Image (cartoon, rainbow, N blue to C red; front, side, top):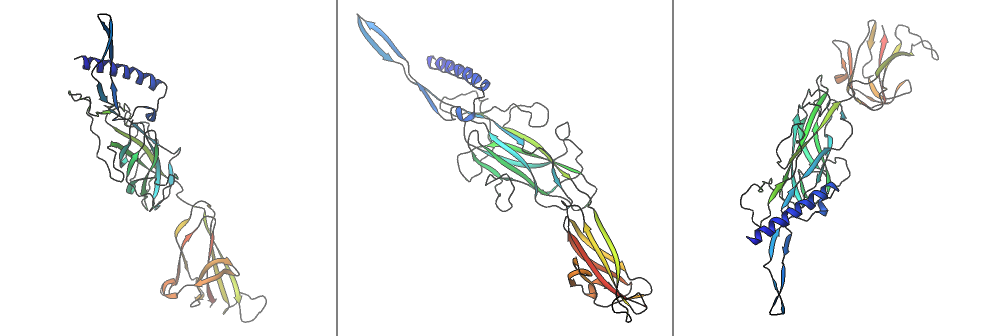
Length: 362
């Protein structure tokens, strides 16, 4: 009974100290580590027939319980700007372990439509192939093939680590924003490279054994949902992917140049039988965004005849396309519809491409 009373007083004192420490922003690494054994022995001095005597009490021992807590926050100031069809884009979060011991943490990325002031804007699409990865080299940038860990392994007290939610943007649609959230759960540590299981609180057990490390959830947050809930060893934070540029300043300038007329050498004219080169110059004036899947279509005008094998595409220069690569008539010209169709592909931001073909005047 005396032992229990002493233990009760010690715990009460510890609680008071912990409260003061919290007010002074005591860190987890300054807290006594979970599992630490604390022992105390009292001594008694007395006299018998004038002779001084001493004796010691039995030793009271208990171990420090695990005070589980952590934070998970969005680690970027703006929404992640993406474009339709982008792959392996990511949002950034930071998880900090404020437990008095080393912990694993389980990561569960999710699509979220939550609003209630936590995320601005309307969630109107879902990301594809959503995953959560740990920043393995601590460079703050998602590196495919390098950042492959899907749980936080052995995070020391007061240590932090970046976590990325990675996904792909749908290639089409009238969409604007996708909200995601990172759900984090405290798990057992102690085995490097092996994912621990989710912790289960034991502080509600009636039997409070001195030599057993109890698991006590100390998180009193709202798990990012704006409503207070019970302590549960879980946390959640929200971020957004936002469709940025929906279009680019893409222009196509078409010009015609008489190359030869069979009469004049220096200054050919548009005479019947003359060869004319059409030039289509594609410019992307938006420096930050490429135009993808660019296809040019043109129809041979009346009173002209297409010159077989004359389609070229390349960098602007010369009379139209400098060092142009020829395009086969089988893919670039439809003899029935008299249509020229050239797949240019991607025109990078700030770049230009030229397509040329020739006709003769009937």
